[in-house]
Amino acid sequence: MANGCISIERILDKLDGYLHKNDYISAERHLLYWLAEAQSGGDAKTELTMRNELMGLYRKLGKREQALDCAESAMEKIKTLGISRQVGAATTYLNCATVYKAFGMADRALPIFEDARAVYEAELEPDDTRLGGLYNNMALALVDVGRFEEAKALYEKAIAVMRAGENGELEVAITYLNLASAAEAELGLADSEKVVSEYLEKARIILEEHQRRDGYYAFVCEKCASVYGYYGYFLYENELTERARKIYEGN
Image (cartoon, rainbow, N blue to C red; front, side, top):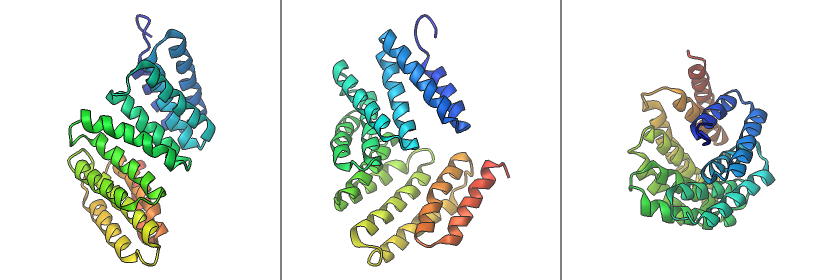
């Protein structure tokens, strides 16, 4: 703390240290401590940041009630402060909606995604990758409620945005796999086989041609591997898993 102000950057650096060690108990304790400090000091910005981080942590750990409580508190704080048209508030809305979707409440999530979308589309440049993230996450919720055409349209918008960003092609690969899952949800496993195969192949080409084999590439390989395994591409699942392992181990 400097001059009575909380350094959010230092808090998040410390948090990253805990998360890199998978020390989730210390990460939660750290965030709750600074949440209490922010509340006692009337520091609304830091309070919202801590609630955003806690939402993500609780979602990762499957702690439903804690995650939902953080989401409700964050949205109430935004309302109290009157900042709902700010980009930072929209990012909080996006995080809250993602929490609801993760815990099987897509119907509750969609209006919140819409709130975030209204601000992002008004305030961000059309090629801002934050829009791509919003479109992807909102499309997942639309698939959950059977609004498949709307979901596919958002996935296509996400692809258009993501291509221009750093690691954009890897994000496009993930979106292709999301489209494969959407096709299965809409058509059933048997009837969607051809479409699913096409999306899987598009993602595979990106993963094979991508030149930058760094930690983020390893993360994407891990994320994609399970999808290929689900669809029976076990050799490629193992290949991606092994590729990620070697990158993490520095081989």
